[in-house]
Length: 322
Ligand code: MEV
Image (cartoon, rainbow, N blue to C red; front, side, top):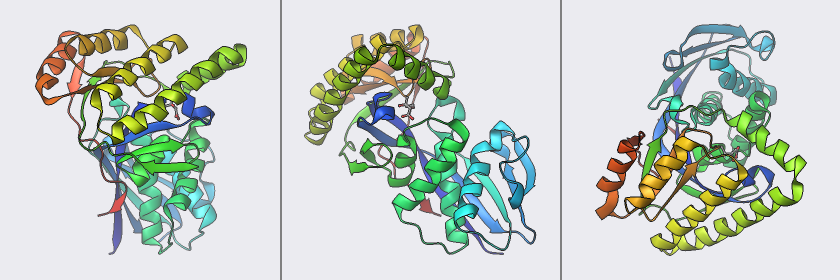
């Protein structure tokens, strides 16, 4: 029986988190930890989801009842993705979906966005629906907003276009940045952050002190603009200083944490060009930019400071059919 499989990468935010939610630009790189979804036509009108990596076995629901009733957290993104696809492109049959993941959703590398993109990409391939990248983005973005209510969609852009991108939400601007030669070290704090909660906390601060927070976002925007130019010119010490500046603003915004600060300072002291948190903050990961000479030192410093140094290839390929 014929089936279609699509694979999408995870992401790491390089510059511009939080400000991107309010229309400012960010820079994101795709990470080669992938999530794949296989789709096969069913002989009933149900969606059957088998996602053993995220603890879902044999979940089944009529397409007509998607997004109704209790939805287990683990299937929320897949269910929303199937709903949005069938709403726009109705079909006569249901579908079997099976996921396979390279990465632990713990690290905040964007497994939800990768599964959403792979799911809609595989459904489009299975039912012969041609989607441009922008159309794929729009369906995925609706699905993510259905589940989370907030978000800039930068993670979906990384999963769809891949590599490294300058991004303005919602995919108003998506252009490549040449980050392929950089060496990035990732340090995991061991603390799982809840992105929507932190995004809402910043939203609250912005409504209480609009002038101050918009001022910080403006400063972040200038850093993003300079970082794009510096990355394209491979001026890594400039990029590193901009990371440090971006981190100071995120600290002022109140989204860093003691654990992140400790790992960031350790990486900076161990000879990284620069370091900052990556993503919403409050936990998850920090990133450090290094030259070859300092990689081992910086990794060691992150480990000694209580973090987990992770290896991941960045500038990964966007969604493709396997
Ligand atoms: C979270 O990884 C990045 C944020 O900017 C949220 C978003 O852009 O959706 C905080």
